[in-house]
Length: 309
Image (cartoon, rainbow, N blue to C red; front, side, top):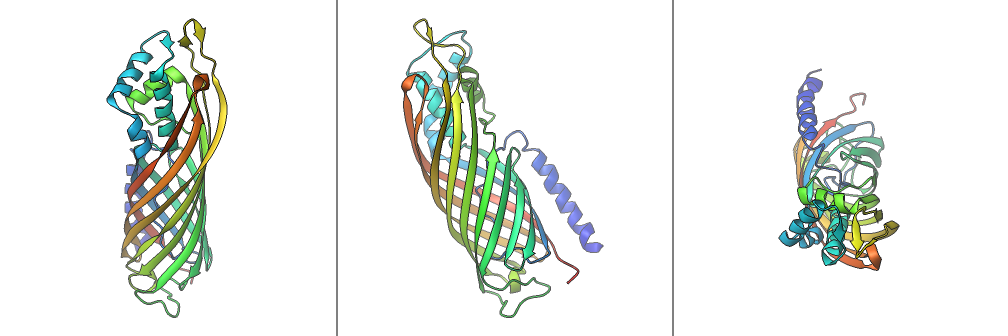
């Protein structure tokens, strides 16, 4: 009873903090805060993760001139098609492919069998399902450590994460202006495969771990533009019907898990590179995008042991 009373307060605080981000976060999580050790069989882990997605592609498309053009176009009844409209489309795509904005998710994981756990994350607009298989290291718990579970032992695992969402532009004034002109719609699905290694602090990561590894990701995007008042001379620009594209990302990560048995704080950094490819725009135009993404984050994790063992 004492244990459950003491974890109730941090859980309530995490839920309250996450509510503040409901309007700002709808991105599939890419921060890697897991260690090489999976959740022991019969145990639960509940976590809240707060990060920030910093992508170079949208930053390069969002200059002051573009923001001014978006504001001006949004106030007009009719908009003439030109280079500024092409740039507005490229900026909208860049922010959908890899937005610059806060990210947050709530997650729960369960240890299914000794080497495998699975979980669900809700990223306030993105639904995420994942599993992790441990191929290296002991699979016990701090209360019931396996033979060989000592401080400094190496754990290794591979994960699989799938996320689906109805993508939308972040809640920034100039992006709202872009959407009012272009009527931009998009959906996306994301697959993430991390290879994770960690060194334990204490037996069975009792007081934490340092984790590192590499990540492969693949994304599928469907998008279209349906402007209602963009013209060339007196001819209205036809809409761009639904387009499908996909691209790969490659990255690495480092995180540090610190705490004791039931509660941990996990600061992390993940870095990705991606060539998003070429994307069709209105009036037969196109744009190509590529860039780096940096995802600093901090997670708060509560471990709920299997007391029946």
